[in-house]
Image 1: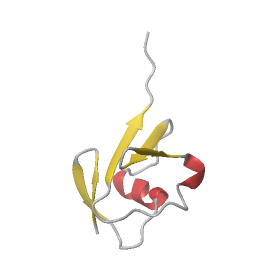
Image 2: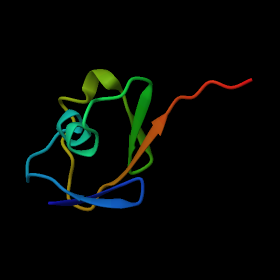
Image 3: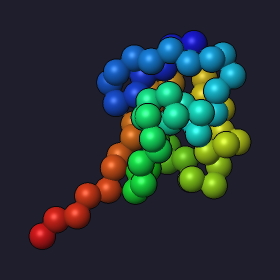
Length: 67
């Protein structure tokens, strides 16, 4: 199945949850990230329960510090 993450296309298995998708996109799961699918934030507690659908638009946001 094809998905779009931060405007880049990735191939994932037909049954893929958010946690599995993150391991495909990142070599090591970073801390301080948020995931939105089709403009809806998916809470971290639901990453293993929320399955990704074909053509989902996924945005990964990384928290940064500044001053």
